[in-house]
Image 1: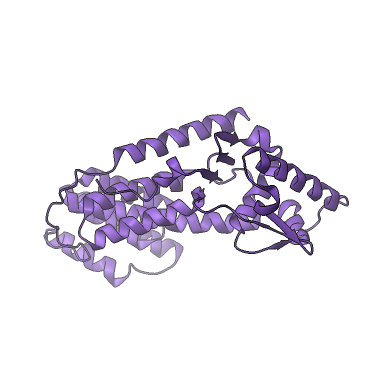
Image 2: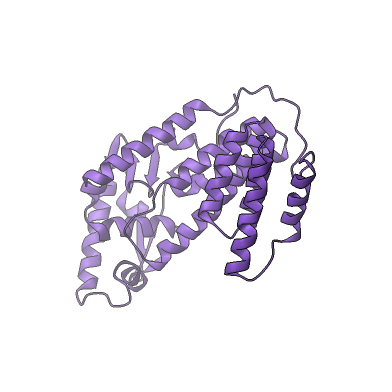
Length: 304
């Protein structure tokens, strides 16, 4: 069985999770929301993790935490938050001075080698799924794409509406769509019409005006032997585009529609079925780890 991209999340010496539940897992300790403190403490940790490739000036940090009009005592409040974070890092077995460095009013987080941040796992899983598809390994692609979809579904700091968080959410939404496209394509190759329809319907729900999702959904219904539903999908999109944008479907989607009308024998854009792989399918152990982590995260968030 090949190794899976998200698997290091389960075994890394240091893990930082920002989705589902903000926490640091290190040296057998878990710094979860109750130990991290209030919302500013969680936002500070998330900000330092996301921007760890560069130093952040304290005024930029204050604006990210409190908006354009921080409180009058923001400087002392920020010092208190940073001091508490350093103490928590020490509890996790990390060197506060080395992990959270400061100079000239700037702060930068330095995670040790091998540390895993959950935000980084989503693009890796999507890339692995797309690479597997390109290599003609739909079974591997399906497993990687399923993991990517699970990662993408985890909420990022729910209730927080900062602009920098919205940008990350938009990026994650884009990765989610690519994961669904890969999952749907792999399912079509494997002859799993039900899974292909589910992936395509989810993609359409995320972006109702994105034609690629409808093309995948038409192919999925046709693969499942439901040409009538595939044609209804096209008509639904045609009306939506006309009402919302005043345009017709793109030529690529019209080509899929035409082939469905002809019987759907060779739908455009659908790659030829590869030779069966010797792998049995998705890595169930890695998927189970991710599912358990997600469930525990949601329960802890509700309790906090």
